[in-house]
Length: 239
Length: 336
Image 1 (spheres, chains in turn brown, red):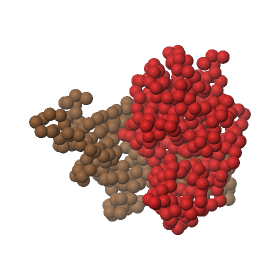
Image 2: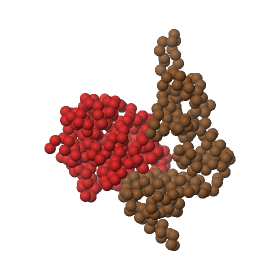
Image 3: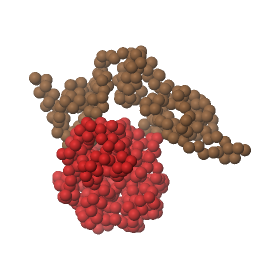
Image 4: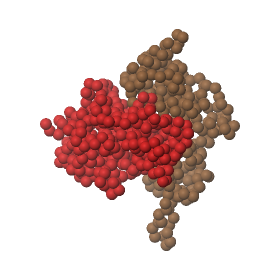
């Protein structure tokens, strides 16, 4: 990256001294851009060399998109340097930079759905749910009912429909099936843990849909499991 | 039977340096394990490698510093990419994987990236959707504290102690990769244990809901720390091995993280490890595309000289079957 390109990108990210871009990686396949931000090392006396300053990883956050690329900032800095006013950084443990969180918040406050925003920005439903929870606690958005979504079943009817209650029941641990695939066992354990801690209906529905998508992608190795679910759904609908 | 033929008929085998060099120059796509000094002598090519001197071969366990364990990619697989990942982009490893294929990862033991993967892999985007397996590179136990585990990117010649190396392989649509485990351990009948925090160490444990000093608990109960903690992942038994118990500091260290949302129990003792592995072998004797086992199984089961049948491969400082495992055999088959 040339000095001019670096300065331009720093300008676009609204970086100001002492912050600088120390690295950038792009993945043209996934359209992701990772930008490393740090503090420029202070010059030593008489301009000879630069002092080495111990730094720590402060965090990695999803920022506003850069053109067609999802942008992630990865910040390292000396302990004690505050990031509180840096809109290109986020709160510790949060997934979005302050700038990104502000934009998503405005859209949620304007009536945007979690599902819609996830699709638009390519963000994880769990992370959006956490943001929405924060806003609800602040009274900035109210809990809303389920949004209507159109989900297309491309399994040729072999799987229960994406909005069939069986997927939520599976995610919630309310039904048990015999599972032979390691990947499904591990995934189901993670989803059940997340589902149990979610109170937002939209987030829960997205988790159930995550299970449906997994089955759809792996249908050829999950025939036995899919059959169990289909039979269970058929019995429930007749009950 | 030459080296290439041998590789075609097994999950892999031990080969000398010259033979491996010949395979690389012949454009073979390889997964390699062996001493750092050997990996550094290999020419560039479509291979990845990691340091470790312990291996399971057909005849049994063997330690070797002068040969490399070599697994050849199946013919139908094509290399989509080989790359190093650092702590900044490791979370993309499954996103980067082909839509249909598998990815083999090797990460250096005791590194930041090893820790990051262990703690965060279950939450990586596309995790479990795309087959990911691999192992944690280590060193000879005599060199603990002296040598540093490393991984190698054969395409670029880079050797790193801070990165994970990953080979992303694509499969034709009619094939799929299946990753499975053989865990000789099951949950015992003892106390249900929960941990308040995720991590590689714990001071407090909730024993049937009651907080206790975990180090004191283990000592008081006389628990054999060769037995791992076992969590039930919807029917898959996943181990967390005990690294050390410090009763003075009141801390227990692990070889993999415990997670705060899981229930653990110490394992039921196993008297016949080899029998347990062989009982877990897949039916029908399918071709094993890759396999690895755990250094703790090597030590506790005294696998040196003992056979685990077709499950040949490096004996490692951690195994990867989507997420980090301990004291477990991991294997992959390619099916239609």
